[in-house]
Image (cartoon, rainbow, N blue to C red; front, top):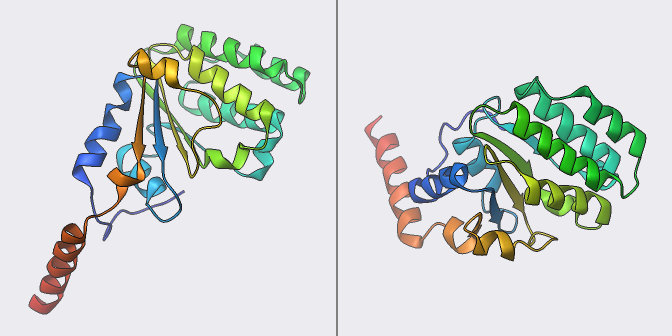
Amino acid sequence: MPGSHEGILRRPRVEARLAEATTRRLTVLNAGPGYGKTTLLTQVFEPGRAIWHTCTSVDTAVSQFAHALYEKTRLLVPGLSSEILLAIEGAGDSGRLEAVAAALAQDLSRVLTRDTVLVVDDVHEIDDSDESVGFLATLCRNAPPLLHIVAASRNQLPFPTSRLALAGEAATITEKELAFSPRRCWRACHERLWRRWRW
């Protein structure tokens, strides 16, 4: 997990836009490598104050993905029912886990008492797994009002979000918004060089 933000260029407008994730069900951060998606996420949603999962190749096994999301959610929301975990383990890698995702969302509706952000980083790692994609899509569609999912990926999300967007429940932040303008880069370099010269 990334640590200190010292020396990292800030993007106040994009940070403010990302912070609006708590006003909707789903926020998508969509950009290629090198755009600072993870850095931006850690600046806005500090690990320990948000549920955080970074996808890897092991998450293409939906049972692994579901289990990881459950365990990391339980760290911040300890009141989750243990029956959800039993259902995950019992379903294995079958399509039944989409029903478990809906049950997880329902249980979160029961236990959440404040706005809670779930960050799912590197979603592109599960693009080739229909089952893991289905689990995440079901969780997004059924997320209770106090759960706000932020999904970051190099690719467009592998499931449709247009209905959520039309309902005002989904927004996307793109490469264009994440990129630093030449003017901003020049100003940042100038400020840093000036500080070093003064020392």
